[in-house]
Image 1 (cartoon, one colour):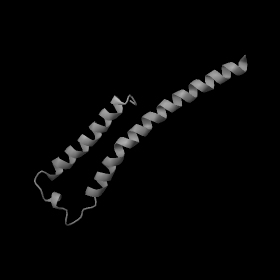
Image 2: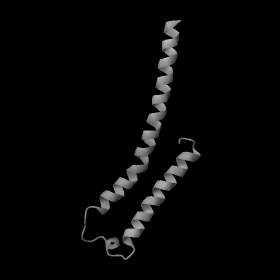
Image 3: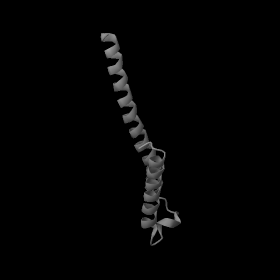
Image 4: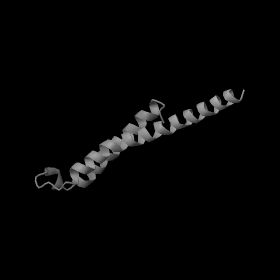
Length: 81
């Protein structure tokens, strides 16, 4: 009987850890494209035309927000969040 109780406890701990790992994976997946974009625009290339645009800074922030929000909406519709 004690062995069964221990198995139930370990199973519940494993399920809880799986839920935590799922959330951490989703967070990492959301930040991956944002980190890539920030890395590309943080390299200070001389010949990036969008760096000279008046709305360049605003547009890259808009793109990053759209990517993050769309990924979060996708994950919510799949019931992963």
